[in-house]
Amino acid sequence: MRVTNDDGAGAEGFAALVVFAVDQGFDVLAAAPATDTSGSGTSRAVPAGGRIPLTSRPFPGVPGVEVHTLPSPPALIVSAACLGVFGPPPAVVLAGINAGANLGRVLHSGTVDATLTARRYGGSGIALSIDGTAHPHWTGAQPSWSSKNSCQWPCPETRTGSRSS
View 1: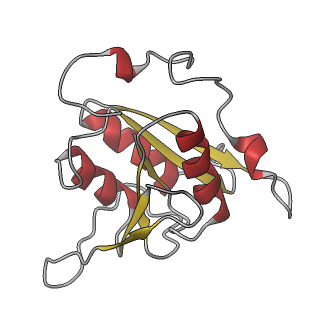
View 2: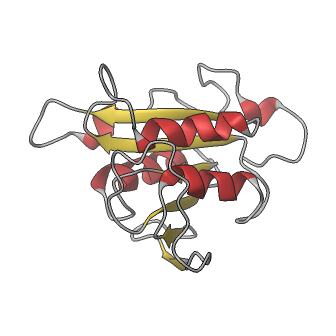
View 3: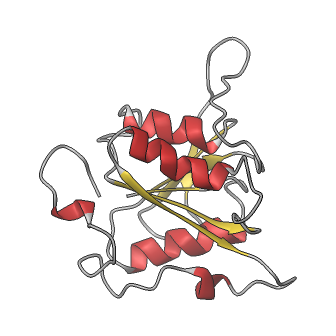
């Protein structure tokens, strides 16, 4: 399972989602923009020179999980993941937890487009966000399934093929 966001690798919501996915037993690869790219939508902008520097480090407080940071929007990060840059293409992309609503008049949500990008490559995705409070309760914004085998969408982990969880 790939976890990304558009608020940056240091965002509290991103950390909460990574912890949640690990706690559910998923094999997690975390990859996110190095900085806040909110509103990046479908952007797949590549830095000048055509090279995308990648930084990897252990995810704070989550043993065995690395976070990969790139100076790129989430749609490009998910495209790279789906093309095998980080290993086997993901079956599922979780995006968020976004600090701000992705409903209504949002036209260019990087969080939402990360999941749409996964879908374009044949995977699935869920975008999560929280809004309406100055002090978000990140754990309250996590998905509400009790195990990876009881989620409420057609679980891609039950499919056969080369996609990883």
